[in-house]
Length: 193
Image 1 (cartoon, rainbow, N blue to C red):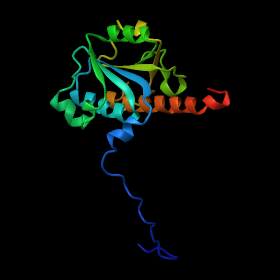
Image 2 (tube, helix red, strand yellow):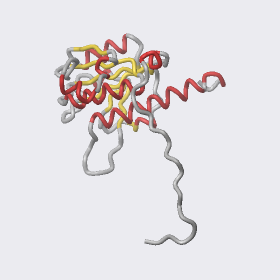
Image 3 (cartoon, rainbow, N blue to C red):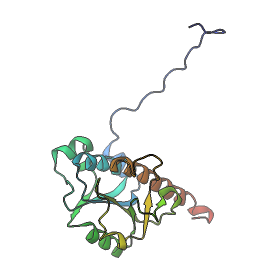
Image 4 (spheres, one colour):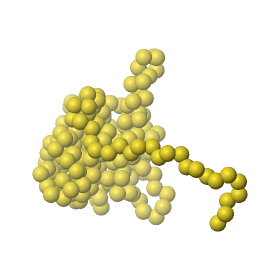
């Protein structure tokens, strides 16, 4: 294939960041006031992925419920890549107990679910501190905990399948929460926060 005109010369490639930041640098960043409630997740790999996401956005912590894998766990550790040792976590016997405890502590709790009344997460003005309940990969959020949530958000699916992988879903939800929180903080000084 021949290109007419002057020969294309690519610009120098930007340097890719490698290695992790220091713990001191990460500690200096204000925590995103978000907790993640993992309701009976079957896959320890998904749980590890969510721990890694929680670290990436600086979330306050993870609550594992029911039979959700919790640290230390070899499959969780494989995908968490050390984040299972960095992100604070606690266990709860079930999601309903976790949701009620979070609400008592002042958290707005949002179930991430495919119910008819769910709003796309980017259309839901989030209140902070916030918590998100992510349900079992096949069964969803336990019906017993849904009535105790302040709202239900979703990722709209336009294909055949009704939902996406819980780890992928958590990524979208967490980065939308981070976006809204940063926007609200930026608006604090101008009367719009």
